[in-house]
Image (cartoon, rainbow, N blue to C red; front, side):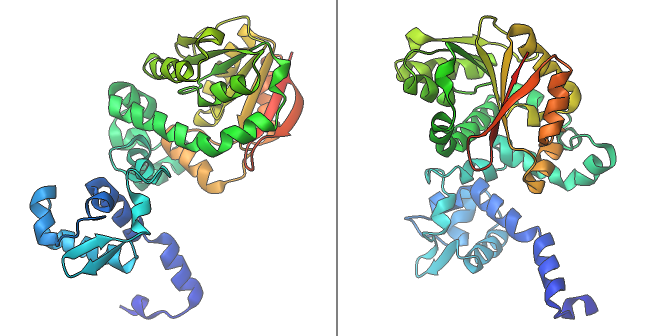
Length: 328
């Protein structure tokens, strides 16, 4: 047991960095609904166990560790969620619950990291190793995962949208086609800020239905069109620019070429908004979940050039995202 007696700070740091216990404890707490359940109604593990259909001793061990982390605290009535732990609640408004829950799109996908070695050995996603099919097929077959993914994208966009609208001159385009635009929050903000513009959003049909509702709530039904479909299929023509926001990093080069080819077929200007390879952690997420990755500027130029597109400008639109404008 000599390994347990190390006092070297670097060794301790590496042990902390490699530990799975705390991350999984937090994810299980979210999956069981503990942050919300114990927020205003303290309870003991024995009281909670039948309600949650879990083992009382094991639950007590989990709650004890959550208390050590400051997520929960002991009271005379049992365990209670702290203000810090409440940030993990479903209604906290920060997206963490959706990211960590085992039965959400992101939380489920992160569990595939146990097979990271497969991705490193093969360059392929680990998701199918764990679940028997790729991420997108899983979403297509399970509506709650698609809904969780769409909400994740909406949560991510909340802070970025005002910056993206402000930091680029969208008014140059009469019609903007948002390819893979989710529920349309970005397109809605761009059109609201530029009353002379029109928009066309392309998304898979389940998500497209939500986008129609969102754009209608913004009063943009008369200036927008929503097409249900895939960006691997022919895209609507007639747009002045085709926007791909955080799309290409989800795919390997072969599929990225297919997406860019469809955009280039439909129009002469393609706007790609991505991180230019600034997060090594996010690179691994893209690899394990999808078999994709963040790319550098020259990688995007290489991909685009195969479709007759040349880089015209680079504009930083958020702290971590740049807009690359390609034209024929």
